[in-house]
Length: 271
Ligand code: KIV
Image (cartoon, rainbow, N blue to C red; front, top):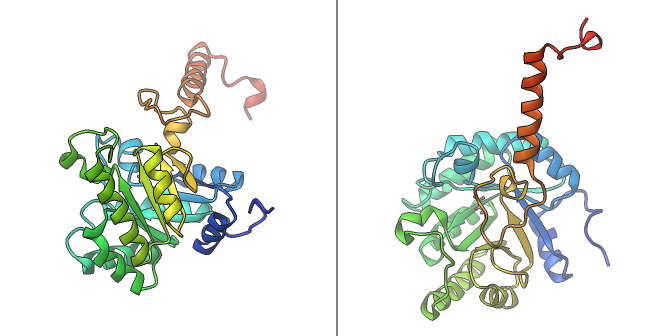
């Protein structure tokens, strides 16, 4: 069976076929050219230009401050690096909640100015009108349910969502509404694994999880977290694949010491 690694260009249709063939989808965030190039060369299926850029790139406490212009800047850098992956860009807080016309205009700006392939937005039934309007312009939309960080001040905390029956039922309904509206995929963040599995089983579109167990169609992680750049963030769902904080720290310390001692540059490293 194909693992889809031979696919030259991943599209929303490819993801649909991967779900049909039970091939798991890999997705990671990226915000700049150099990282996006490495991820694309490694064969990641989807690159998300997440509004988590607000945290990991700009140092804000939440995702709320990042602007549409800043997202377009990050997305354009990523698009310039990518040959194979599908590039999805988050609609940032304040760029779509006003009304569906605002949502459409923001999506059109992202698509035109960055060259990305799709947009992602947080929310369920309350964003359906916007999803419809964006789709009517031919822009693919990915949904995002469960822990939706743009609503952090409404939730008050980043704890696991939809543990209670009422919230779980609402999430199932929201997922159905997003699929019926035409979303090509949905991200489920930080919800019980059995609930995420139920959504994935009932849906014909790929469901991508983060902190949502492995009964879904694919996984996404924030790049800086999985690379161990951000050493103070260690939720249970995070697996670290590198320890870049310590690697970069020791490289920088060694460089500083070599400069101070006069060891760098040596005779071979000069003209
Ligand atoms: O912004 C982001 O990185 C995200 C992922 C956590 C899914 O939305």
